[in-house]
Length: 85
Picture 1 (cartoon, rainbow, N blue to C red):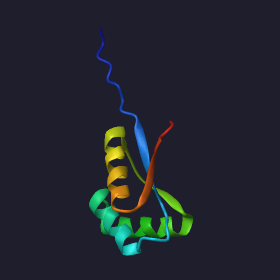
Picture 2: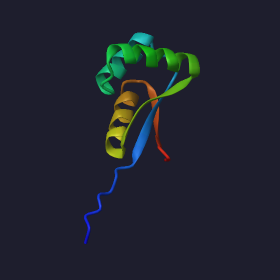
Picture 3: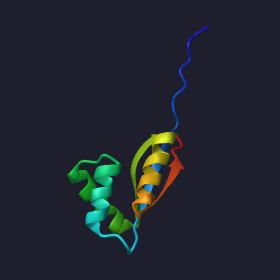
Picture 4: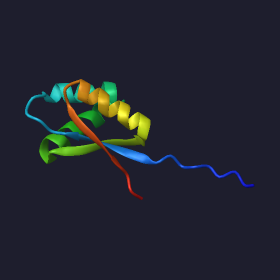
């Protein structure tokens, strides 16, 4: 019987803009929680500020849920969505 490896499904973490958190706080959260480089975190924070929301990354479900929970615990607003191929 051939060994079939199941590919892990990916989930996007979407961070929403709000009127409560400073850019500095959002950037720090992206660096500390989502492991973004400083330049990428700054670009993403600006994108989210201008567009209202943005996908900060895609991960398998458990990691996406952990990142979302940590962002929300830090006072930000994020959700996850299944990536459809």
